[in-house]
Amino acid sequence: MRTFLKWGLALLCGDIIWGGTPLAHAQTELPGSLVKVGHYTASTDYLNLSEYYQTTRKTTVTVQYRPTYHAGKTQQRRLTLPQGTTVAGYLTTQKVDTHLQQALLVYSSRLSYALLSRAQPKGYTVDPIADTDATPTVISGAQLTAFKRVPCPKYMVAYSHGDLYAGGIAAALSPAEPTGTSLRITPDGVVELLSYDANTNANLEFYQRPDTQAKITRTNFHDPYRDLYFAHDLRGFNLRRVSRTGTQQYKLTIENLHQPQHILGNPLKGVAGTFDSLYLVSGVPYYTFIGFDGASN
Image 1: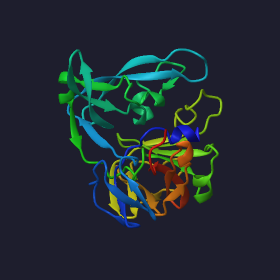
Image 2: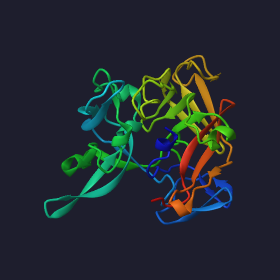
Image 3: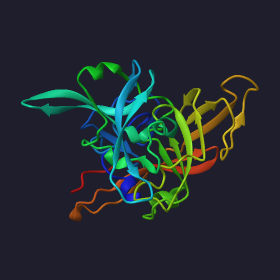
Image 4: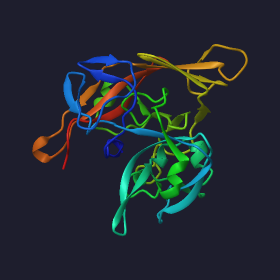
């Protein structure tokens, strides 16, 4: 599982760490840039560099689901995204006959369970491995007009897919896969708290129904803190009540400790090193994968 969590090139948004000092402005890096992650110089080609898009109208995409506990083939389902849905992805090109056409690859497995479950077949789970260039969630042609480029949402933590795992430095540096709880912040603005399920098929352990989930109604970012607001309390979190009425009654504070952890790779074997960032979520330690220190074979 830990190998899968650090599989592929991740996506980047949020704070920039330069010379070991966090800068609290929006993403400005370009592919091929050099940045400082702690005391290590890294290329943005191997860090989590991402784009975000928002639907301008209700639109339907194809999502792939895998059997959760039993053997079987994957199933593709049509999922309707409401107008205003934010997704993570990137623009690419596809060869059609003898020419290239622009296409948007959408990372569908990062969407909230509340949205994905609308099209999920019984006994199946969204397939995280499908989020590659071979994913069925590819938008092209006239459907591209249903998506517009938007800035990285403030609620997305820096250099992360949005998935954080319980534990501090020891857990971040451990080669063992995480088996506790996972906090997920989705591109469409939902916070989920998930438990590890050891009985699922490979790589689906943290993709089941969340123990807790809620829509983010407001975000305040004042580095190193992100304050997320909700209309109601969330089981499993130590939220602060800030209002008695309205949609912003409870606040969850996520603090970036700006202490990136580096796990050395093995250049002789073509194994890249990895980086994790440490966070406090209402005072509880979490970590998240933020990228590689170089290419691997």
